[in-house]
Image 1 (cartoon, rainbow, N blue to C red):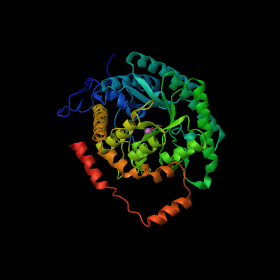
Image 2: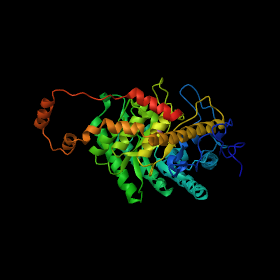
Image 3: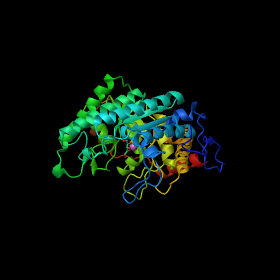
Image 4: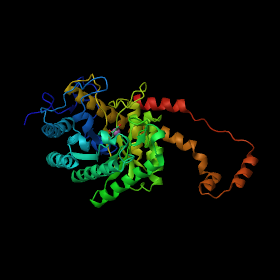
Length: 437
Ligand code: XUL
Ligand code: CO
């Protein structure tokens, strides 16, 4: 069988001193970190849409990379993409992949025909999985590209569109289960609004939850035991997306009784679009029990949109991995590179350079996260900062054994209170010493 990435052999680990652009400098799949192989800590996944489908088109010009994979026929091209994706994952030592239904099999004229295409390609993917041991991390349905979804899918003002979205998600769930995916993602592509002048917001929110409930019930009925995820994003494509950020989504899931089945898929660039740090979003998910999976990428702080760049910021990767380690690691989730090479990075090698850059940044982040935890100074400081809650008064408050009047009496007797230093600058310096020391 001919290769789709000729001239590129399996990427090897050569260490930080290596100048070979096609080698890992930090990612060594079987290196143990705290007794567990890097590959099992990180669970890297390839995003099918950016890697196999998108050629770099933007609103100012067409793609710059040929992603037809040797055929103008859409189904031949789709088959070649499936084969190429497994070659790519093999060469990069990536164990998982993620897709939208329409990434793996192009949409046809009718739903029945689209479904038949999905059957053909998912058979091929299943076969490739069996031969290689690669796994599907999660599947999802693209309910945002087709013009029928202009006003939303689950939140469409029109009942026929809601019906179509449900049918599409049913099929996407079936192929996710068929391929052994441990996750199913809801990213509300156009589940939001442009103007409230034409929108029944409360009605749309109820319907979004209704669609998710239908999906959970159906998924469970066909043996899906993995996690459903919502992937928060505040804007783009709609002005206001309903799944704005983690806090909003958690409130939504609890309000509609979906919190037992859903966790969060946190994306770095979505976090910053919402005015948060990536770290904030993961911490919130972990502290509330909604930590699920991660879309690893990064935005550009000077741009107000979702640039989906490969993640190379080691501070962010480190703080992310601290949260992952403290969450006890991934269960069904993993690190999906929802990222694309820049439009000017127009060679097939650039796909490899991009993944190597992202994987090395996270390998480094993992090692540094473990180093920070082992160093212990940050945790020690935080524990000390909150230590007054261990005293008698603190314990009584935590056990809800006091009234406002009790607290007033104590406060009046104290007269005034002095608080300790938050020591931010010193903690930031400790972070640097641990990372670069
Ligand atoms: C869009 C985005 C999606 C989801 C899956 O910003 O991140 O690709 O990850 O639908
Ligand atoms: Co994403």
